[in-house]
Length: 469
Image (cartoon, rainbow, N blue to C red):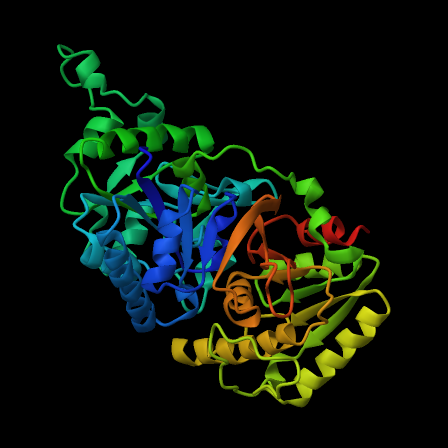
């Protein structure tokens, strides 16, 4: 890509930075903040929209607002934007709502591509079927718990059928352009151009990209980074010939597009950022089975104290406005006995030199409809954010487990407008740091740990790297 190219990632939760480093994460998207990110030296930045935690109408509204402000910010800059709608590698999220809005506001695009592979999390796509590795076995994602999500459930792992399902037939399965492993691995140049007299030979990936138009939908296979690097090389070549593409992807494609050098601080050395070798706090909002197994393993570690929040006792609470970090002496909206009990236990644990693991009661609660589920989630998040605002000011480190939990932690609990990614402390697990002038937690290392990433020991491993245990 040229020096004027900037990869702009609209991330529906904050975990999409889990393969990159050195870039900005924005929790605000006013024009001036966007201009700052566009002028930053890093080749990419993320806008954390948190739309996966919203209903479809609100997700469309937020996405449109970001795109509108981005269009204004770009007017005065000589930048070639590459747009990525980053979402879940297990196919949960507001597709096609978000890509439709981006196309309306920042298009036209010649094509949009679904690229859900996420190698760090054991997700690959082969023959247009998306798989999740479970106990060493590649399982079609529609057979996993993620396909039964009460908001974003689906019935197909074959991506053309998934597209048809989610677009309610507007995009038919047979019309989806499939880029298979054999196509990608054959090389970027057109086979037809190499052998012009060989009748019947199929065109190469680059020729196919150049032929796309009218926001054609494509799905892309990938089993490793070599596959994505080959594909993105063809994408760059097509972009050089003025083709415009939009991507709906997981995090691995972002790394391939950005082509970054290795991160400067290794995963094993991330503990150097712990403040004063003091204990930290872990906030576990994710309720998927993988998170529950990781939580159980973490609670066996020395130096931790488990503090369960019974979500059935959480009352509805008004949200604190993003960007406002109340002083510790301010009476918070959530004054329930649940909050008071949690904070008392954290205070005792911290005084004893132990890390508090605050977790919501396990299992997914069933709701009558999507609106009820989202409202309940907001109430639980409001409580957890009140917990974060009242953590000890000299805390050593903070770990957020779960995508939406981590997003709210950055934007509301810590009231960060932007943060820079230090790198990954484990595969797929990013670390950012509060700025030196943060009013409550200066230079606090903060871990963004997705709910569906890592083996059973991964959360305990991250804790050990920061706690020195």
